[in-house]
Amino acid sequence: VDLMESGGGLVQARSSLRLSCEASGRTENNPDMGWFRQPPGKEREFVGSINWNGRDMFMADSVKGRFTIGKSVNKNIFYLQMNDLKPEDTAVYYCAAGPFAVARGQRYDYWGQGTRVVVAS
Image (tube, rainbow, N blue to C red):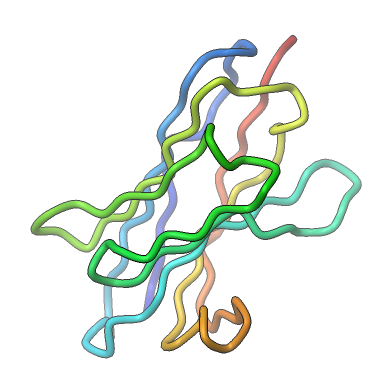
């Protein structure tokens, strides 16, 4: 599975931003999709996940109520909608895919190259 993120950039605090992740290649096993982020100088952390049919969304407590994950209707594109952004959301955001990833404890086999988000105060 090949993953390509897009949509990062520099935004002001309290604004919104939508990241996209397009999945291609061997997606016939309907992998779970996840979003992770790595803030500057910190380890990568889980943001949220969704299953291939666009249901069963899980979000980290740090973003719950502000971030959601969605899936396009007819395309293999997943979104991370980020609202009310805070400076602490500054990070490189990665999308990931893997069969039964959620059941395996959010363990993913395929990763995108990442897209940088900077939130200015």
